Image (cartoon, rainbow, N blue to C red; front, side, top):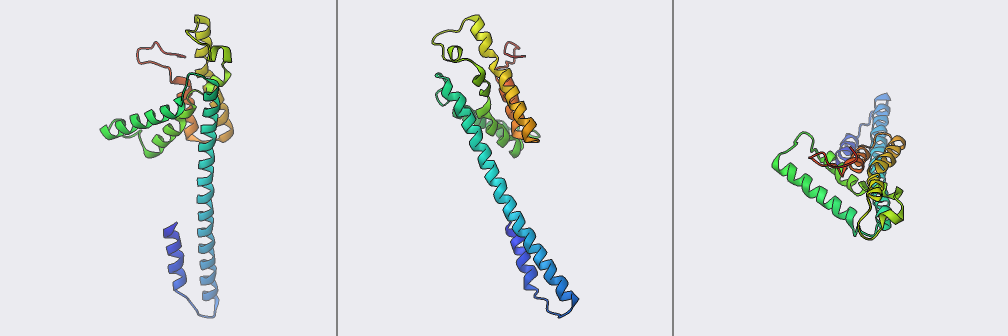
Length: 186
């Protein structure tokens, strides 16, 4: 934005005064450059406001799910913090350098609070049962991964092209997978 503003100032400082069509063209170019700069300023403002609103909605959704689950205790905030620590460590060590772009890392950290969004579909009796779940209850609890993936896929279909939602879908769907194949749902 500063570069655009500076360019407009430099253009205006030429102060062309010929009294003919060249001056008219110069004034038209100045106006066009000024208008474009203001439009860019507005776009940046709306883009930042939209990003803040998205972040707020993500945290609100995650908090709604977390407030239903008596065992979580700031789990979504801790998860996002751990995800950031892991990504920073991988980046620092040079792992997955082509994948760990600044945008990807922001998308993944933003997505982390949504990993348990599928718990919204789990009944309170199973979600908040004190003690160990029965095998049947555990199978129900495991469905929060596929339910979360479906919830976020619906959000993707309405938001068209939000890459952080693609990462959120992957987290929701696969955060209980294990390297040894004993995780779920796959």
